[in-house]
Amino acid sequence: MPPRVVVHADMDYFFAQCEENANPDIRGKPVVVCVYSGRTAESGVVSTCNYEARNHGVRAGIPIVRAKRLLEKTEAVFLPMNRPLYENVSDKVMQLFRSYADVFEKVSIDEAYLDVTARTKGSYKEAERIALQIKEELRNRENLTCSIGIGPNKLVAKIASDERKPGGLTVVEPARVESFLAPLPVTRIPGVGRVAEEKLSKMEIRTIHELTGITSSQLMELFGKSLGSYLHDAARGKHQEPVKEGEPTTQFSRIATLRQDTRDPGEIEPLLTELAVSVAKKLEENRMNFRSVSLIAILDDLSTHTRSITIDSPANTEKVIVDLSQRLLAQLLQSLPTATMRRIGVRVSGLSKKMGQTDMMKYIAS
DNA sequence: CCCTCGATCAC
DNA sequence: CCTCATATCGAGGG
Image (cartoon, rainbow, N blue to C red):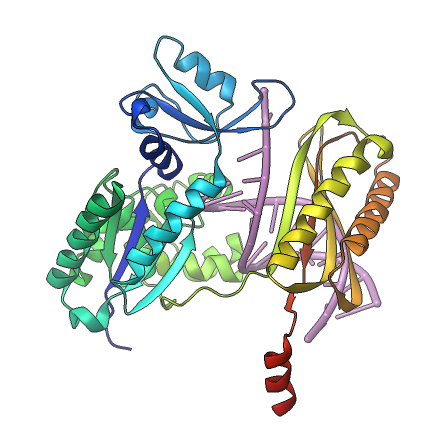
């Protein structure tokens, strides 16, 4: 396998940056994009915020009320999520990124990998020029900034893009991978979250250098075969996953917060039906069928419970989703006789493409 | 190999 | 005080 040159491009404080462009008056003030849960006027969490807000300690995931306290002496602007706006901007950004890639992979609404091995002929200097060009075009065309990392694989490129934010560019040539990774905390490795960090911390492992001191069998014992061997390689900057065009989605879900905690099906079902309808719409938009329906329940103690059912042949109707999710709710309430629900959700999975006439011909022909 | 369910991650 | 959406894994059962 020849050496690769992989770029990871990550939009800076994306949702808040979109809002700054949509309404330039708010530029310079702390901007906080919120997910309101609808329980009380203030309940919910911060989705994203700009750096003015971060300077006051605001972070993604903190309760909105806490953000308001942190920003009470400022002219902070609190905005509800405007998904359609961000999707529109994202489409343009991704189109721009794609135009610079031999192989393009969108990983989320605001991040993508670009394999540029062929067009740079393996030159990191050339890849750096491409990165600067991307940034400039993004600035000129969309008035947006991003952070970019370049490395010999997706893992190193992603860690690199995180190194200098916002607006950074970090190039890690193959010969520099080891010294780049060594001093970083293990939490910089994608896949190492709160739980994995805690496990490693108990073994006095906090940096990636320290992580290289543990054998792959030890890691596999601690984290399972898959995550264990991944971490062993990741610590050494080794990662084989190719940059590839995104696979089709395999599930759709909608989850919402109840107005008040309850275990009364009469109170839960209207919301559940709404969610089921919304999921059905999403299926229809994508011309997909499903084979499984899951009910997701988050209780008042924030524990999560799921119940699912798989049917023999693919379906796609709203009615089936509604009926099955209500059946699953009854089943769940029965199995948890004292549980009180806080949030409720519906998921469909086991998706398959509804075949149109042309596809059907291909199918028969094969 | 398929299904179910909880856990984890990261958005 | 604690959102929302998707993917993946491992265990357990069949």
